[in-house]
Image (cartoon, rainbow, N blue to C red):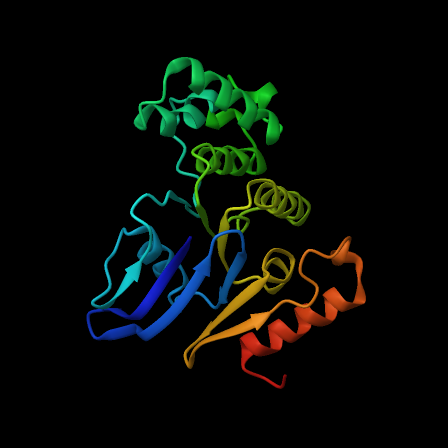
Length: 237
């Protein structure tokens, strides 16, 4: 299964964001869309999700493909407990109560949220809220999980924990993972394929240290992050 951009063009008013873009996102692979703020990274996700339609070209995917988009803000309802928030997508899908109960139980356990199942958003830390948003996105076992700046509001320690959680969930579910970020280190940690978005267009970078063990502690990781930062600035490679 794949998401295919076939000569897609899209813009707002007189500003063209994408012009005849052709891309393929494969299920089971991780992609990071890296670029500065305002370059159009989040728009790419909304086109994949189908929240917006291309003005030219087409976005092609299987009609039965399940795609979940987790936004930068967690969008948790203050009146819902953690359990209720994670259960909600299954209710929308009209999954039976017995099956819902088991799926939510397993998902909460996987993301270390079991002890928080009766808590409300006001009782949660930023990292905990992000885990709940992740659980809500994962509960339907999507073919593609889209994450829009998933760790931008977190401190460094919590950010690294969240990134490890995203990586582990992807490895476990083997779905397509597409992450939007402006953080070169996050891109190096999560992406097998990195789509660098600049005013010049989109370029593809294969991550040479993708998923290597303890990669964050290696010189190769630091060097690759530096390379991404230079490319992001448009400087020497």
